[in-house]
Image 1 (cartoon, protein in one colour):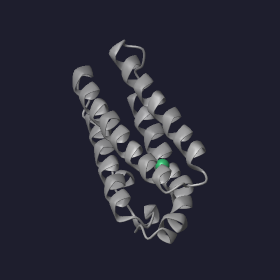
Image 2: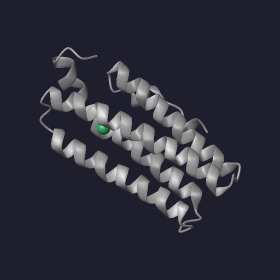
Image 3: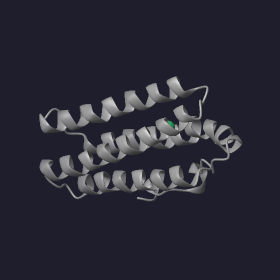
Image 4: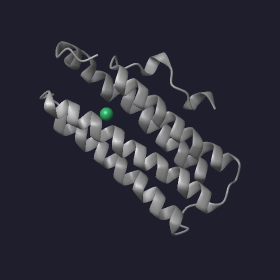
Length: 135
Ligand SMILES: [Fe+2]
């Protein structure tokens, strides 16, 4: 379960976003736990839906901040968020429609996306936002 816990390697240098990334991983851990405990479809759908809601909220806040500060890579960054959101919504729809059964793969995919995005893409805005006085 430690793989769903925030670690210093995910530090993007912006306190608010670090806190949100921690909460995002918490929400994902709930999904993983529900799957591990072999909870029923409705229970897994609920925690997955919570994760989607939280991811949307966080990614929108990140986008607003990047846009307001005229981050040069804003459009590309936003697109990556959109692809991710549509993918997890698809997982949710598939779950509701009994189209998938391999739950753990879903949790691992989401975990890999979030952690890679934080470590590779989000970290690219650190220096830029710091130069705008945002920490
Ligand atoms: Fe991001």
